[in-house]
Image (tube, rainbow, N blue to C red):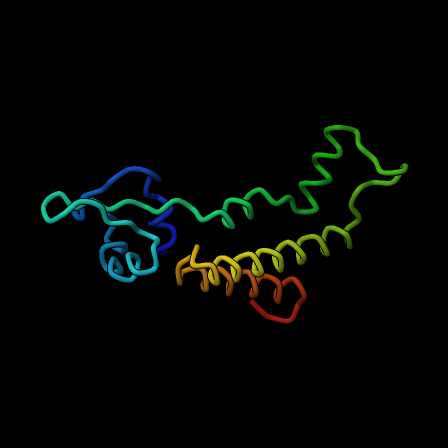
Length: 139
């Protein structure tokens, strides 16, 4: 729920504390500490804004999964040596591989100090999705 409230905040827009969503205000100290929210100004001129997405998050949004590859291929009548680009098993492998690669990118961003502690939750979410895809987790 907190992530949804943060996502609702316009990137680049500066908010007064009273304009922030309640869930954000309740967790403001931790969000500032992890770099998800940025504080600017001083005292009565203090404003808060959503930090821009880190580079790894922007790359992850642009990664194509197997279904998207098939859609692009169909739109362009593309085939590889007379065969379709992605079988169901290839799509499954690509989805798992993309999630694993995203976890590696997040780890690198954490090591380089480019990501906050909120990234750990994102990594956990990706790991849970991998486990569900492999039918190793119920839910």
